Image 1 (tube, rainbow, N blue to C red):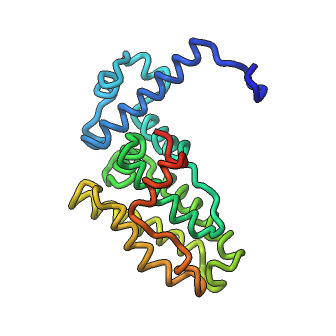
Image 2: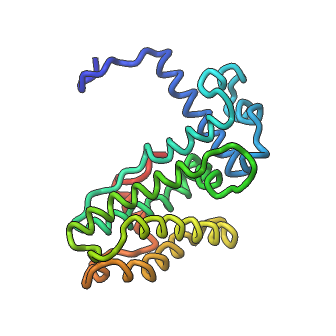
Length: 223
């Protein structure tokens, strides 16, 4: 047993976990590089250096791989608590931008989310997960008086997720996301004043280097 009371994993279980993680990282890399439609199950198996049988042991098809990548992108997200809940929202996006530089899962999930096509990948669920995440933070911020009482946090959250998708797409088109942190800073500077209470903006840390700073202090996305 581990110190927290959980049963220790067997060597076989550890290998299985590593194999699954490798498949997801390799698939995410290929999705980011070539797109979902142009990536085959065979491509993923070859990149991960596993047999098709090993891949199908973990995932029933390519669509299941994509769904797992969507889920996985939330696993490594750790947002440090702040006095201002709005700061936590800002920090989450800066950490996400940082993760897009270093984490293949984040990059693959971003490409999958932005792609539009005739495939069967369910993009609405992951978008709703992001909206729910923002709603949870803004709702608490509103209770604490950081967000104006007349603000509809559900609609505001939907807008922020859409705005982030837009700036990410723009940055990807022009610089392969190299200046996404600057786009993000501009997004918050121009949109947050519409919803936050007087005095909150002056207390927020909006800095393109914020994600890297948080990461250096051990509060980054798991890579």
